[in-house]
Amino acid sequence: MTIKKFSLWEVVSIIVISLLCLVMLYPFWQTVVASFMTEAEYLSSPLKLYVAEPTFAAYKAIFNNGELFIHLRVTVLITIVGTFASLFFTGYSAYGLSKSFRGSSIVMFFIVMTMFLHPGLIPEYLNYKSLGLINHFAVYILPFLINTFYLIIMRASFIEFPKELEEAAKIDGCNHFRIFFTIVLPLSKPLFASIGLFLAVSFWNTYMQSVFFITENDLKSVQEYLQRLVTDSSDIEGIISADTGELAYNVNTLRLANIVLVLLPIVTVYPFLQKYFVQGLMIGSVKG
Amino acid sequence: MNLHVEKFKKIYSRHEVFLFIIPAIVFYVVFKYKPLYFLQIAFKDYRITRPIENSPWIGFQKFQELFSSSDFQQVFMNTIIINFYKLAVGFPLPILLALLLNELRSERFKRLSQSLLYLPHFISWSVLGGVLYNILSVDQGLVNSILNFFGIESIFFMGDPAYFRSVLVGSEVWRNLGWGTILYLAALTRVDTTLYEAAYVDGATRIQRLFYITIPGISSTIVVLFIIQTGHLLDVGFEQILVLGNVMVQDVADIIDTYVFRVGLQQGQHSLATAAGLFKTVIAGIMVFGADRLAKMLGHRGIL
Image (tube, rainbow over all chains, first blue to last red):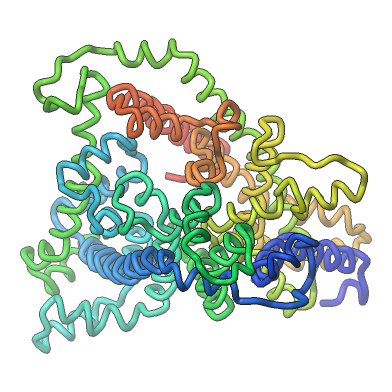
């Protein structure tokens, strides 16, 4: 179908969208560039498209100090353990709930209701306290073992699963556990991949659990540590005063280098996984 | 349904199904329903030093205290103001952007720009906050340098109550503008292309096609998403304000969530904070169900 060979609207769209991309992404580029500046260059003008004399001074200071890596380790652990555990338990429960049994609709009702029943921060805190989860790594994982929204999506997809496959496996002597692992999981790979990605991003971005339920510094997530570095001067000055080297960086470039290191993982994997993100949202919008 | 049940019986016995759903039942009871038990402290004079069971019932005293405190009135107003501000700016923009993206004929450029525009959605508020502090910085920040270039004096965006809400709205748009287009783009692909061809043959202009075909084609998506948004009237972006907020802007940026956190966890007034949280949950529940009713009344699928 050709309506017009060349449209003014398309040109306008291309220009507006290109400008928008520039406005939205330039701040990130500026952050990366300035993090490689020497103090002198930063003070003369931090707003440059490129660095005249790039230095790794700020990054070296971060490596020598090492505290960032304590928190990165916590967040990496949260992301790996959380994503796999949540994917497993959400999928496993969704599979069970895709079968109808006596009382299954009541169970589903009580599960869906939790999307609207928010007890609030204090009851949640008291609950974690009664479970011994305050200042415990498990507070990052256990409350997110089953994600209700993804459970609903997965259940909808399992309901449409051909029953014949499961029956055949059953006749061949598979137990329910093996059916789940050898038939259901492999056949739902794209669904699990998309949901796993969303889960991984949200675990990587863990911030509030750390602020509310963790007081021990070594257990704080990297996102909270980063936020402290940005808004609170005591941590960042601690890094600088402990540094006996040449100090070719300043407070600002040091902050920016930290931001870049926390931003890096998402930005590196994003180009490869971007289509799964969109696919995942589409699944959610159609079936959820 | 019966057929489904029968087939199911052949596959799994009852106790096997229970093996599947027992973890879920334990999870929902322990992490979603058990906290509701602690809601009772909103109606009790609870102190950390004594167990909940021994705390005396005080009825709605904490709620009276809450509603008569000027702090909470301020917080409630802030929540609503920030939300309307975000709705007014943040809701129409993704629609406009989706319409622009829809004009693109080059698939490659479209896909590339979409990928770039979605990116901020996946970045945490801590990182975005750090980047924001940098570009909004008073001395040599990007935005203020541009303002200075046009002869406007530097603005202390992060600490000036007059500008802070705009920072919240602007950064929200930055993070979610691209991502917000996805559902509209999906709706746009479902608009019947033969309608455009017919309109073109009949001599409809671009603008006419936009107003008589494209926008009616996505109107139900617009209505449903708008209703969902208004249903979340009291959710203003807790994490965003925790990260970006500070003492200087507390008067304009303190919302119900941050109030609960400060009064409850930091000052230890558990009962008062729980009352505030419960109030929020009840209002939010009414809003969501009301929004759903409204959607169904207007002939849409509803959201529940």
